[in-house]
Length: 152
Ligand code: CDP
Ligand code: MG
Image (cartoon, rainbow, N blue to C red):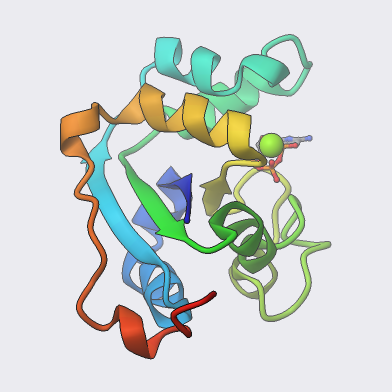
């Protein structure tokens, strides 16, 4: 089982798409094992987007991500990091395939609704930025035997 961090970004919250986006992850069979609504501070934004801080578009990104409440969640499942990224689609909503969250709901490169960690190291680092260990509610749901075979 793999864990990944998702953020429902401020545009997702303001556009009242939280439920529809979370439903996609639940429908897929992924487990939501931690979740909170919060504000991203400029300090947290710089840590989260450390790889982008020097880019010329970073100030606009920081303004966006700190501009309203977000929902942070830890999602768990088989190959969850890749599966979630594929469900989100390409970074720009204009390029993201139809059927993906960004492809279906976003027409922007910046306002692309949802963040998903891009690899195991990022997932571990990002989960620790948003959640303490005791905030994560691990444990298989009772429906697990009906979501995949025992040897998967
Ligand atoms: O989120 P993802 O990993 O797909 O994209 P990224 O290249 O790591 O960029 C992080 C976030 O910065 C994106 O999700 C966009 O919200 C934003 N971004 C932006 O505002 N302008 C760009 N030219 C590229 C990305
Ligand atoms: Mg990225």
